[in-house]
Structure formats: C-alpha cells, structure tokens
Length: 263
Length: 252
Image (cartoon, rainbow over all chains, first blue to last red; front, top):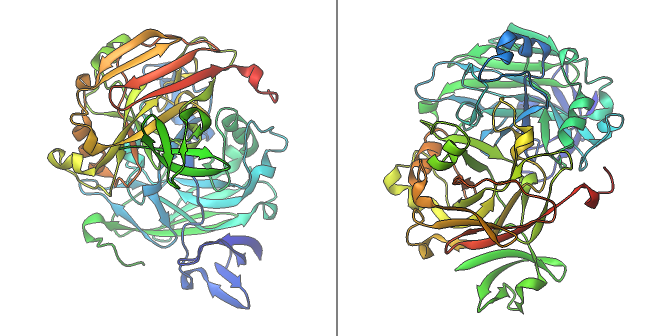
C-alpha cells in the first residue's frame, strides 16, 4: 500500500488514504474499495504547466530542424505551456473528440504536485517542494509545428485528465526512473521512462522556479515522450506510471455528450 | 461603475471609485494612496494576443497573422496597480506593452461575433511586459518571456461594460518617467474583441473572469531599473508600475 490523497466528488478537502496501485484499490477508513467504486474527482487545485521537448527522444525527433527556420537553434530554457482550467478532466471520465477531428494524441506525463511555494529552488532540495506525484494525460490535437503556442491544439475542454490520486512523494524512491506505458483498448502502444528526461525532475524544478513561482496545488508536467500514440472515438485509454498508478479515460464523440454520464 | 479589489486594514475588500476616493464594500471611504491595489478580479484563464496590431507586427518584422496568435498566462505573473516588476541585471531589452483587457462575464461556447459583447463583463488595463533576451522559437512567445513573476501589472479598475460605449475606439498610451513612448488606438486591432471571443469560444469554453489581453500597438522601448511606467487606456484606467532590480532581492 502507498500513502496517497484522493479527491472525492462532493467532498471539499483531499482525503488521505492508502492505495494499492497494482490492484487499483483504495483503503479508506475500514473499507477497501476499487478505484472505480469511488467517484474520484480531479485531485489538484492550482495551475497545470506542461513542459515541451523534455524527453531526449522527443527532441531527437526534431533532428536538424532545430537549427533551421523557424526554430533557428535548439531550446535553451524549459519550454512551458499551460493546460487551463477548462481542460481539467477526471479519472474515468470521457475525453471529447471535437467535431471535425478524427484522432487525438495521448500525452502521458508524470505530474509533480507542488506542496509548498517554490521560488528559485536549488536542485539539491527541490524535491522537498513536491507533495507527491500524479498521472496526467496531456491530450492534444496532433500538430507538427511547435513554433507557436498550441492553444487550439492543447486547451480544448476536457483535454487534461488528472488522477486517479496523488501518491506521497516519500513513496517514490527515484522519480527519474519511472516506467510510463500507454494502453489503448488494453494493447500496449507506448513505453518509455522518466530516465530519458533531458532535465531531471529536480533540474526542471530549479530551472522553472528561477523565473516562475510554483504554488501549492500547482502541477508541473515533466514532459511527454516521443511517438505519443493517437486514439479515435470509442478507444479506452490507460496511462500507467510505475509506482504511481493508472489513469483511465475513454474517447467519445463530442456530439454524443450531453453534460452527463460517466463510464 | 469602476470597481477595484484592494487590501486595507489587514483584509481584502471590493471597492468602487467614489468622488476621487475609494468606497470599500463595508462603507468606509479611503484615499487611493492608502490601499494596496490587487488585480481587479482574480483572473481565471488569461489569453494574451501577440502581433494583434499591424504597426507593432511590422515593428517586430512580422507579417500580420492570419489567425489570432494566442498564448496563455498563469496566476503567478499578475500584480496590481502601483506595484513593482523585476528587471534581471543581465537583460538588454525589457519592454512594456499597454493593452486593453477584456473580462468575460459568463460561460461562452460557440459564440457568434454579433453576440460577443453579451459575454463581456468589463474592461481593464494590462501591461504585458516582455524580456526579449529570453525569446526562443518554441511555443513563442515562451513563458520565460511572458509569464514571469510580477511580469503582468493588471488594473487598477474593472470598468463595467455598460459604461464603455465603444471599446474598439480607445486611445492607448504608455509614459515612461512622464515621457510619451507608446501611442495607439484599439481601432487598429487586427482581430477585434468580437472576433477574439468568437475564435476562442469556437474551440473551448470561456468562463467568468477569463481575461483576454488584446495586444499592443507599436512603440516598444527598453526600460531601466527605477523607471515609472504608466500604461493608460482612455476611459478605462491609468496603470502605474515601477521597475526594480536584482538588488531588491537578497536571495539571488
């Protein structure tokens, strides 16, 4: 069992629980319940910041293009973006396929949940600013160019499932060595590891907080690995991170959605 | 009506402009100089526009965009009227950007341009500072340029939409140490307010207190530590900010 926090629909505060990430169960008071038996809500309260091109493989995919226009040089500082509040989505809920779009990219990322205000932190003690870890599916409309901010591709309603819980930082020995897998309809579509990050978790926290304060409840995504799989309407998506758990969602047609229902 | 959020006497108040003073929501009358100005609303999602004035785009050697160039800002970057913005010692070019801020009043999805103003609660002024030294060509303009702590003064007032006859014909000016350095009019926006609301709401849901910073006209000039930067939008407000240097921070 791992110490974790969950957010339950209708309960204001986060609830401390023990979770079993293998059986996907939650011990809450005297009961042991499946994650699917509890109406899990989005476990974070702040701003979600994403990091672009932080996997070695993702940067390699750009190849020599980084030296050509419009990029002209490889990135120097962390390249960040914001997943705004309308994108937040919960464990088990639907991801809506927008009209006119046929495929969505599933962006599996480890989310660092901030526990105390982090300003210009040192790499050496950066982890003490992290309350815990969660799983984020940074959904995008596929786009090749990363020259201009991808608001239209990344900021659509429900494009940021987060959960199912926050695993206490102390439960994770090394956040820079976590296997990440994406399953679509139970078939493995992607496997990578945070050991392939360009900026490690602590380096990223130091470099980001040099210019930008992270506050309690904010989430910093460490990045999305290269070759993010694409999904279509009807697909069941599972993003799994070793030691953290798995985040399940399903893709549905926007036209079918009537402000109701869960899977 | 002109509304503010301020800190006074150890707590946060909503207030309105009242014969040159502030009337707090508890009925007290206070001089403007006696309060700490907060942002006029607590911003939710904030959109900012790049290159939305043809003259500014030309100044930066860009062709005017064919669709709005939108980027997002986080809550860490916003500060109120009469506050301070840091200029790191190693930078060469940090400039202000005077902008009309549009504050959304209710949930907006798939709004047509002819209905767009029904979704506007009011207007304010923003100074969307940029440090050009940190520009890189990935998701440009990147957050290191545009989402720095203290990087976006916002206020002083929320001016009710009903009190603004034509937001698309307002003069924008910036003065640095009382010298006029930037001048333009909202009439010159490439994508006007209804176009921006139509565009954004076509692919995502907007909510109350989302904010659209509508871009800046030409007139970008470098600023120095100690400069008093006043960005003003006619009829909306006069937003004062002072540049401070690294010496104000003892931890770096």
